[in-house]
Length: 419
Picture: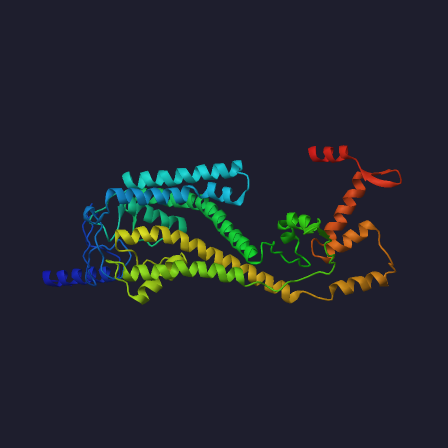
């Protein structure tokens, strides 16, 4: 069978068209330094290297940059805010600065300053906002690094070259673990500050963490406060003895922490909406700004709506970190509320009475000091019976009979400590 030249040309054209429609063949020139910013019509053969971004896309170049003084001031504030987190967390918490925390802080500083230098001088990036692949300006750099820290990852700025992509991937992986631990410390500090504020509202009294039947972990955090509570309290010149309470308690779950943390998060979410709707050059509708706020501050970061101006990048660089940390506080408070609610619903108010009845049935009419301490610790939920029994067995192993009673020699404890 013979085909004419026209038939062969038609067949080849049909094959090529099929491959293009299927996405298996791209008839475009090799990648160059220039990037097309035009919106290509459907079926175009122009390579699209960036995710689709809704709305008009502005070009970021020398003409859209902020004044040098403003850019340097913004970058300085952002860097100081991030790098001071380890020191600030230790100072406000009053805890000693450990060697491990020092190593993590040093690694974080290397990651921050190293990223600032490499991303603005060495590694080439591409974006739908760029006319050509290039290193980042300082505002673009802190904007992208905020996406890394919060894991938002819009994808509107990405490495252009394969080796740069591998390096940035490794940088993101290493930096995430280091910076995330520091941010976690700050979130814990925020939660502790919220508890202190609640104590202030309660009249400068310590807010008790309710003892549950299995609440040993929470008891550890309040040990210092319980020690002071059992001491004498002065009311004028009168000495008030502490009230002895043996019954296990389960307080109702508190919703105030969840409410405070949610209001804190709502502030950042609402201000985000207003900013990107009203700021000149952004032009998001109320629905688009709301969608962008929720998706960004939840760290999902689909990237359909992203900042379109230098001012938008500056705002997002700070609000991503603040809003994401606030959301972590909301999730943590809500998770604790669920745990407390489950424990409260499972709590048996008759547990103390049942225990006393069992002791009476076993023929116990009185108890010595050790038995009383064991009974009280278990009833108040400070520990479980197995823990107390283990301690008593350990005491019997270390102790010796002296003057009609068993005592533990200090030398034995020292040997045990050095073993």
